[in-house]
Image (cartoon, rainbow, N blue to C red; front, side, top):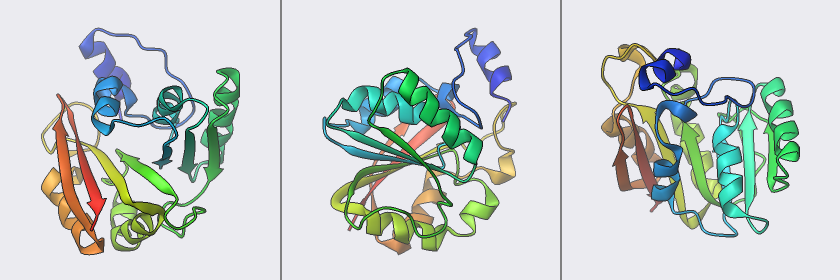
Length: 199
């Protein structure tokens, strides 16, 4: 993704953290997390965390009683995230090298919110959607939340090409057969957040 081009279009120069892909600055992260309404003590999983900026932001909201688990296949991304978390005093963040399309290192019914940020449009991930969403459902508490953030299905000079983009309806079609029902949706300028709950 050419996030730098997008940042210049917005006239902002945010300081990038971490190593790996990030969509963190495609929208106001506060709007995303306000919608998620994380509570103190929440267990939050950032699946396919990339640079881990969502993980670090969540950690700042959850405080000492909360827990952030960041998962990614790229070892360098996880190592850098763990270093950044320690530097920022966010001891409630733990990064794990993990393929999110395989069985997850998470106990059944142990997660309050699981977030998948601009990952599902990747074909190799989307092709494993059925097993992946089923595993997400296993890990979530009965009243937990699956949050999927993706770029809107429209032409843009940043992010994935149009043919790879998913609409909120596309995401719902992938999640519903695995036991999820739509809870809410947040429309942002360039992205959307689709939230689901186990049924």
